[in-house]
Length: 373
Length: 256
Image (cartoon, rainbow over all chains, first blue to last red; front, top):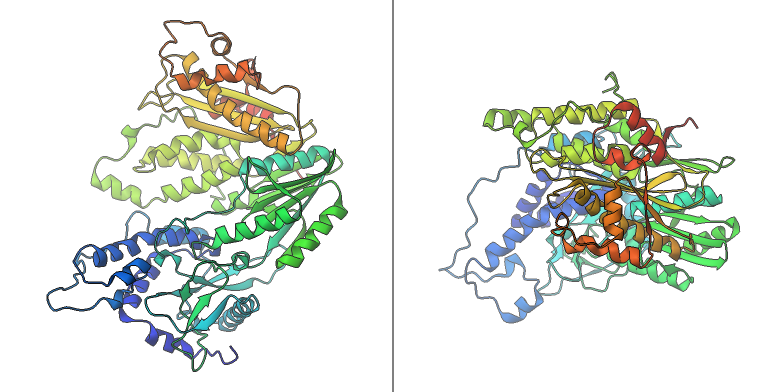
């Protein structure tokens, strides 16, 4: 990993097969907004296109594919033997982007002038910040042992990757943070029962319930944040991805990455993360409530308890005894890379303010509303 | 929108939104396609789901026209934005009270101009603040106000029971759980299974509430219409009444 250079960018372009790069270009145009948290939704949107392609190859024409490969379900587009009579036909209909939901509309809400893909960003003034951000992300992937470099076995297909860039403005510092994240184009994954999309989100009313309890019983409300959430989940399936753009390992350019941990964009990612977190909480003696699966509770005595709410990577910890909460935070910090945000101030764009003397908690979305207006 | 004139209610009574105001020819449609209707409604929806039960009814109304919005519908959206502009510092407040669950329900008979379906609205309060709410068009056409109320009660009860069990799991119990309804006849229909020609068509699923009442899972209580906070979940209200409802659900301007 030492000799990652940016000159490798051009190699990436060369290594991607012609056919695939067409598709990715198309997708790039159709992806207007780039919010890291939204990657999944985008992936879903694009899934349809992937399916159409598969059908055109699979069912439209009788192509002799050997059975073993079909069972794998991973048949590569390029692997289909060519025979003179059969010609694959691509639809020659002109693809038109939807007029109603034009790119411009979406961008108004989320766009902060970030580069759309990594080939494009290196002539701007912020070049250095973006490069640092990419190095950071690569380091965290490495530390996590996210993948091994291997040769792609026959009959398997490697998923494309892509860099997503984002500028984040912290509430307590004036300097913006530059973030880069590597994602897998999970929408190219085949549909399966195992990779059905699932997100560990707590219900809004559960959040409000717990907040109201905290208000009346004068409980502590602490917030924590998991860094690189989805990288924590272990991957059971065998999934390969191409090497990240710009970071090809010298001498191993044709190798692919076999994923060990789940990565953003993979359909399994949120599920694996939830599985891991759930088993961790159970080990700690917490009980998952049956009425909301993202609420964990442990009752120590009559009115001494800790409630933990999980919203993908944000968590609220509510309890009476601050020392117990600290202990929980410490054990959490040992197992996951966490950021302690102290007393909760903001969750999901909702501002939490409290008046402890009057035992009141106020929720407001002033900032969000101002942004919309 | 910074310089927009603020308004005091999210939907004025002069808006009579219906499908008829949707554009019918191509020119109007292309005109409307320049308006970010869907994303505006989406943003409003997020605000509504998180902290603002007061706009639940209007957001529900304007989102019925998402597929083909017209000029008048867009005006209504702008009106909501103006309302939010005026009440941007409103907060949902919890505290002061014991954490007891209370439900309110209300319906608006045949409120939708196009289908003549009724609107159901309920909200559930705990510790002085609203914690669950819903405003939606009922799935079937109700023949009487009693029937419309009866359908809401079922919906509200389901939510109330879920919250009750959730709180019990967290270790909180209370003696009785009550749902406030402003229709005396709906309460009677729930308690007393008399057979009556005016109610015999009501679908079996809505009679589930009788079972729930028999099992003493919760109670229905009468509330005067002026004290029913769920009133704003079903119809456009005049200003005075609207402010009372906001106060009931714990929405207030508080400087911190």
